[in-house]
Image 1 (cartoon, helix red, strand yellow):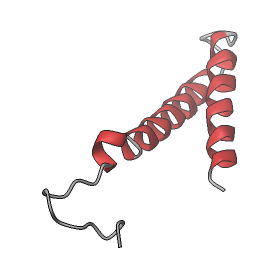
Image 2 (cartoon, one colour):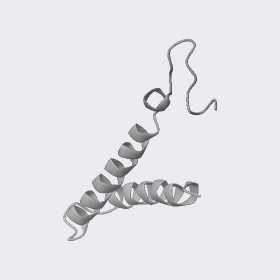
Image 3 (tube, helix red, strand yellow):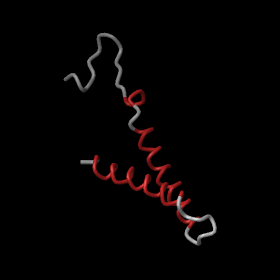
Image 4 (cartoon, helix red, strand yellow):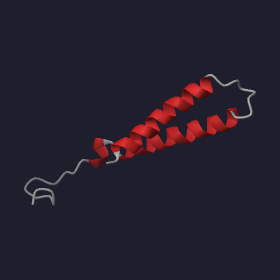
Length: 70
């Protein structure tokens, strides 16, 4: 269920990056595009940190049963 909204954010980030690349730096919207791209990239970075498998791995000492095994 979360795949599609995240996919849209990823695509929007790519569009913002391309739009910024083709927008003259003296254009009035240039700083706004920079901010939007920064916010979008930070959001994607936070998602990547949250789903890092090393951070979400569940380990239990040998012989113990985790709640997932029950």
